[in-house]
Image 1 (cartoon, chains in turn blue, yellow):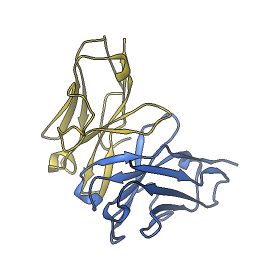
Image 2 (cartoon, rainbow over the protein chains, first blue to last red):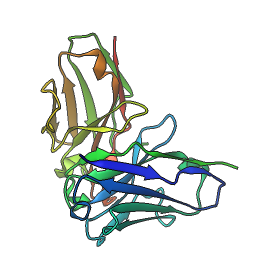
Image 3 (cartoon, rainbow over the protein chains, first blue to last red):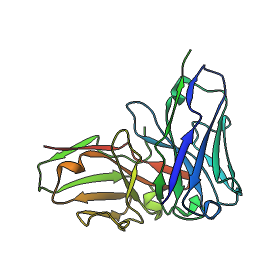
Image 4 (cartoon, chains in turn yellow, cyan):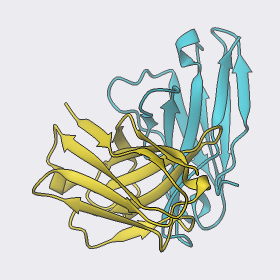
Length: 123
Length: 111
C-alpha cells in the first residue's frame, strides 16, 4: 500500500526558510516522478513543483520559481521542498504526491497523495 | 486566477446527474494534453477520480465519467449520492508554463 507522509511544516516568519519532507513507502520510489501541490486557506489546489524519477527535470510554478527547490533522495525514498524567502501568500497545506509514471511532463496524472503538512508564514 | 476554469459550485439532488466543466486554452487542453480529475474532501488526501480523460482507477464507481473536446473537458456524476459531496478539480499540463495546472475547483453540494 502506498504511503506518503509529509513533515516539517510549521510557523515561520516572512523572509525565512523552511524545508518540508515526504517519506514514501509501498512502491518503488525511484521509478516515479513526484510533485508538491499546495492548498491555501479558502483557495483551490495549486501545483508547486515536479521532479522526474532521475532528478533530470525539475519544474516550478511561476509563483515559487527562484525561491523553492525540489529534490529527492531515491536511496532514502524521500522527497523534499526547500522553501526560501517565504511570503505570507505561501501559507498553505503542502501535499506530497506521486505521479503515475516516471516523468511528470508526460502528464499521466497523480495517483497518490499524502495528508499534507501545514506551513504558516506570519510575523 | 487558475489556468483552467471551473464553476465555483454545482448542486444536485440524490439520484440526479451533474456535470462539472473545465475550460482551458490552446496551450493545455486544446494542445491535446490529457485531463485528470480529483475529488477532495477537506481534511483528507485528494483522490484520483479520472485519469487520461476518461479512465477510472480501480475502486472508482462507474457513476463517474469524463470527456474532453477542444479546449474543454467535463466530469459527469450520475446517481448522485450524499458521499459525493466534495470539491472536484481538473488538472492538465500547460506547454507555455512547462508544468502541471489545476482548475480552481468546484464544490459539489448534494441537496
